Length: 453
Image 1 (cartoon, rainbow, N blue to C red):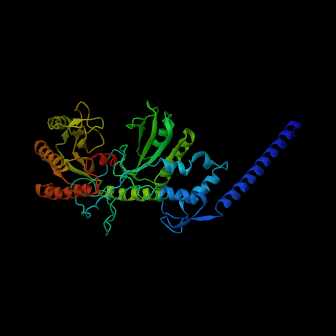
Image 2: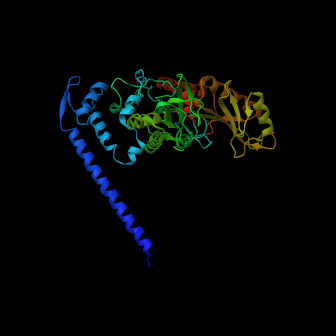
Image 3: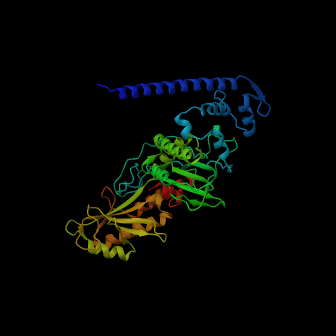
């Protein structure tokens, strides 16, 4: 049975809820009338030769923003509606900054033409395999006579379009404003979705929670902040210097696939919520354009994401020993690393190719106690610069090991690898590298090392 106190509290709660509902209805009605009054008279824009509504027309004349579709409401009308609705106590007003502040935060950057279209697809002939590290879940295409193969997607009859120059949405920028191949911060518009966070005054905010949220999206994120002196620095949780502008780059594709709509929404939502708390204005490029660019980039990456392998197999009666393999690998300047395979590296420490056991056991650190009937030489095509010379070095090592260990160098079908077959595969490998150069993603370059991880 309810007590008198409970009854009184229930009545007070009902009265408060009723008052809030009535107040919201009255506010909504009042602002709707203000919006209708705002659009009730038109005047001609002399600069553009089009009718605009009230103050929105003046703003459109100043910013020189053009419509891309006659049936689409002008950005000024949208702005006026947003200004009226911004006074309502809704969640959007708590998270999304006003569009006028976004426009004011844009800075012109030189535009560039599109990247030249890639060469016609080459019919793959090199045997390939997916990385055993568990990182690469994207299907890889076939390319030379060597290890395990993963079927590639069916070839498309028409050539892929080139990457379009990355530009901000028409509704949020002047028509002449497009983004250059390289952002001032060092982010890459051809491979990253770049959003800007601009502060009204230089600030030293705590970016830690934001960076943690962005890392949970599932795609690599880079961020750089601009100091008062104009220099850019990698964004940390607690920057030492005050920043007036921060750029965030969300990678459009990696070996797990293209950037998705959900990931893009999580990215922009996290930035808007952070800006609402810290008092900044966020500028996000057009999402549909970014998703199309991500799909196109992912298709290209799948075509050139190739691992070339050569298999060295022993006679049944004479398996290879880890002692012999360890000595020959070290003699060839390969080092045994934590993954249990031998790595050949360049002067910068980048892996050129690996020598791994075909069995489940990795090579022991002390080089003792393991026998195996086969090892595999692996070469990750898009991550290696000067790949032809690396391919030659790897194949030469394969022949040397076969001679000294009395083994056979074979492809995935067990056929002996010959100099003639390797020459044919070398020419096909050259075609892969030409396609990557034409796309602006040279093998072993900074873009490739980010895309093929």
